[in-house]
Length: 92
Image (cartoon, rainbow, N blue to C red; front, side, top):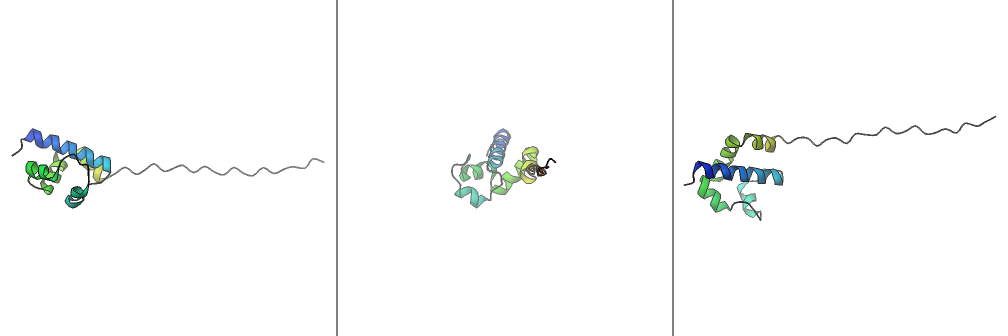
């Protein structure tokens, strides 16, 4: 059984890794990914199961959780107005 301090450290590590990859993977996706910060066996040892870890990330790391679930929209590229074409004026 892991201590509260160990669980909080792991939630921070996992939350930051989720931010790096840009999404929250499922347990199966996580197992298939390499390299990962914690092996799935370590996660099960510390938290008991994947869903319990996710709930603890949600409660212990609310800023990270909010950023993962509500990503900031990418800044829109401002459109540059087309310059009017120069009209040649004939001299008389």
